[in-house]
Structures are given as C-alpha cells and as structure tokens.
Image 1 (cartoon, rainbow, N blue to C red):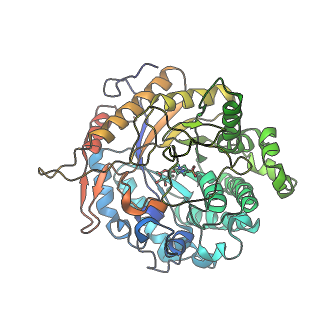
Image 2 (tube, rainbow, N blue to C red):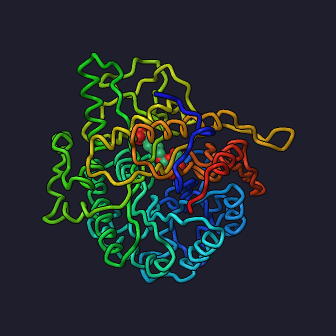
Image 3 (tube, helix red, strand yellow):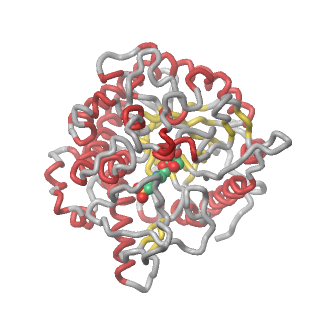
Length: 472
Ligand code: GBH
C-alpha cells in the first residue's frame, strides 16, 4: 500500500483518461423525438419512489446541450467518454427503430470523434423501456432476445464508428436492487424475479456479445460493480460467513458465469430455496461465457459486512437508502454493514482508496483468464457550493480522486492490467433513487440555469491528463 502520487506517476502511454455518464441521468428530453417512458421515467412518477419527487424528465438537458458538453470534455483533455444509449429512445415501446433517437447518438459519436475523444458506448445502464417491463421486464426470458434486437439496431447505426462496446452496466443493480430491494426501478420486491433478472441479463449480455462479435466489433466487454467483502470481525465465523455470502452474490455470481461459464456452487446453495437453477436452459452458460475483450470495474467503496444485526440505535451502516427498502441480498437477507472508523462521502460510503488497489490486484490473481481491466466508474458525492469567487472548491472530491488514482497506480505497480480510468461523473446528474440531491460531477450543474462550472476536481484531473503523453 504505497499511496502513489498520481501527479508524479509515470502513467503508461495510451492509458485511457475518461469520464462517465448514463443516458437516464443526464439526457432529459424524456418524451421528445419519439422517446417513450423508460422504467425510470415511469417509476419516478410513483409518489415517494425518488427523493424530493425528482424525475429524469429534464435532467441536465444533455440531449440539447450535447455539443457544449463535448467541448467541455475537450477542454478537460479527456481521451475517452463513457456514455449509454437509451433503449426507449432507440426502440420506443420496443417496436420499430426510431431514427430520430438514433440520430442523437450518431451526432454525439461524430462530435466525439471530431474532438479526438474515443466513444465508449454502454448499451444498458438501467433504463428498460416501460413497455418491455409491462411484458415481464427482466424477469421474462424473452427480454434477453429483445435486448439483442436493440443491440443490433444500435450497431446498425453506429457500428461504422464505435469500436468499444459495453453490454451492461452493473447488472447486479438492475436485477437485485430493481427487482428484490425495490430501491431502483421497477421497484419490485420479488426475490425470484430478481434472480431471473440476473440470469436473463447475463443471457442478454452473451447474446449481444455474440451478435457484436459476428459483426466484427473491435472491443466488447461488460461493466460490473465489484467490491471487497470485508468481514467486520475477521475472528468471528459469523462475519466471515457473511463476507463469503456477500462475495458470492455481489462479485462471483457475475464474474464466474462470464469468465468460467458456471455459477459458483456456494451461490447456488445460498439461493436454493428460489429454485434458481430451473431458470437456466441448456446452452445458456456457453452463450454467457462468450469471450470478452475487457472487463469494466466500477468501484466506490469496500463493504464491511457482518452476519449480526446492527445494535439498536446505531446509524444505518454503509447502505443508507432514501427510504426503507427490501434487501438486495437474495438468500442472505440478514447481512448488515457496520460502519468502520473511516471518513464517508455524502452517500455515507466509506473512503478507503487502498480498497481499489486491492480489488484490481486480486481480480488478476483469482481469475487467470481475466481480460484487461478498465476502471469504468469511481468517484464521490459531496455537497459542494459555488464560492464567492465563482469557483467550486471541492477539496474533498479532489482528495478522493487523487487518492483513488494513486491506488490505480499502486495496482499497476503490482502488475494489475489496468488500461484506463473513467471518473464518475462528468456532470452532476440524476442520482437514481436519490434524485438531484447527491452531486457526483467534476463539473457542477446549476439545475435552474443548466450552467456548467468545472469544479476544482475537474481542473486537477485535467492537469493530470495534460502531463500524460497521449497515445501515439
Ligand atoms: C453506480 O452504481 C452507477 O453505475 C451510477 O449510475 C451511479 O450514479 C453511481 O454508481 C453513483 O451511485 O442495495 O445496499 O447495495 C454504484 C453502485 C451499488 C450504488 C449499490 C447503490 C445500493 C445500495 N451502487 N448501491 S445496496
């Protein structure tokens, strides 16, 4: 644990410096040019679902301000921009392809390429068309095949210019948190539906990967949010078992079908009361294990986990939610997340940069077939304000960024094959169930005027990028 200074570190040539966003969080224009409701548009209208009654209807108006936002990326010196396409914009109601919706992404890709920024496209960042949800959503196997059709439509329009394709962003959130915890859209609390969603998203990933591969896409991968499951008391067998369970459902239930072609045995045991295996059809695991060219890793914090209830009267631990929710830990609903003595962000998430180093190093050691890694999200929410001088002096976010970039450098020194880093997020945006109350941007957005102001963290990031030789 070296704690390298990323400002001094000799970053490898060609290391990708990016920033990430997602369609539903930034675009707005929720019902323009033929776009229909996604599950997030629909869900946000359910009273009490999203904090403050916030909705993605306008968001940060990126749909109309896209050229200005690309200029901003150019000024920061980004070498790549990670964004997602909205299924409900491309194939509204999952019917015919919507040319106007595709045209937006086509113009975005052109702007990026013109600015010398590599487009890093994600097909699914949680915004299922509501019409598809009404036919069963991810709990229905058919949705995986519909996803492949949607992937084909996006590839038809952009495949001549987009080289880097990510199928899913964090399938665990869009399965377990959407269908079991009910904290995210579609807000269901049905453990078996959540497991079905998990398997069907894997299948959808495999089907889309097969299609993109057949069509000659250059690089295909997936992004997972991975964690270090840390037993609260390593000497306590109950906490060690809790850490094993969390690692199974949060990490290995995703990594292993993709990399090894099988669900972990202990995970199958943990969820056996839900008859998970009946969902798996012959050939599914081969489809899911289609080779990938990179693995995206999203990491914000470790998980200090216990098998004991939190003592009454203590704070909610590491997983505060905007309102009471069910458990996303199907089969392990008793898990708790006691706070350690560490600083936390505005999300209540621990700041422990060495966790990122450990995770990146560990993945390569545990999975010999691991493809190259990209940190596709890392960042922090803090309550920042505009200062009297007009700047946003987000020293806490800047410190978070520097420390985590240092951790990536440490991982590289230990031999982890990390090829790039994308800070979450370019802009303050719609933070899902938390609405606009949590700001992750390195660029501030004034939600009244939509004015963008780079925060100090953005300026620091730009300085780091600026001294790294660009790819030759
Ligand atoms: C990412 O998810 C998302 O990809 C991004 O869109 C989002 O804006 C960003 O992080 C910041 O939140 O059900 O107890 O696990 C982050 C990982 C993990 C955060 C699950 C929310 C829910 C609490 N997510 N967590 S729990």
